Image 1 (cartoon, rainbow, N blue to C red):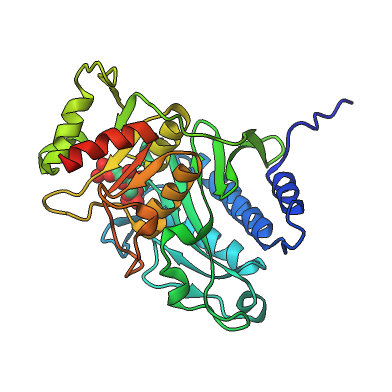
Image 2: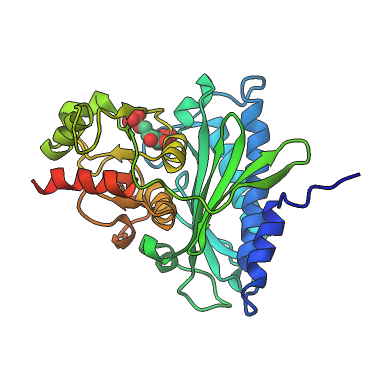
Length: 336
Ligand code: AHM
């Protein structure tokens, strides 16, 4: 039988990357394997969400004041569980939990990473069969090895991420992750239950034709944003507009599409919520890291997202990210 050795699994790929660093301990590869395992388990439940009593609200409200869906809880438990049982993670911060979870056992206290994640982003779309996702960012801890990790390990600016990624549970399930060396995408082959390298060395096109924003909030946005959106709808000899508007309302799916096809994703602040809706630590930092490594840009409209020093775990920020030239065009509207 012919075996196609051109297809690398997630494990094979991370081990090959590791071999390029003789001093590497393998902890990051092990962490990514743990995340892949949690993603596969969540994928199984997402795929049968319409069939079993796992669909729908769990009846509680999360720390952001939003309804918690049952799958959110399941995904949170899976992620926390694999990271706690693994050998690479000293503690986690989750969008679903008020406080960080310090694992505080001998193995975990000697682990060098902490992970921040949104276990199931876009969960209001679960019951209508629209793509949802998981987002994660990995940081090297600052506290002393051998001791429990601390809040300080989590409140680091996004620029200090060692790796970041997302899983999109869509028409196929994909895990995409970035280190400083590049962004790579893996598609789940359900026949063998492995993530296989399908999108090597992903680059965000410098130009794009897609803008993604919640138009319902248009009159809530500040003037610069409104002017930019109006500009997107006009034919312009410089940008070749009008652009196409695409907004799923599921950040992982919206940014994934724009990363591949080129485009700009925006969740600006509004009159009622000047800080916007999206969470800096769980959603914006991981995507900002991936988009920058892929050649794009990510800001809060004025500042680079990755430079923001977080002051609290659940803080929100306006978010603009995508193709470099579209981002630069958008920025001119802010400075006008
Ligand atoms: P969630 O964590 O409750 O699912 O909210 C996050 C989602 C993002 O995936 C998406 O970009 C955004 O909320 C959509 O919000 P809106 O409906 O206000 O446009």
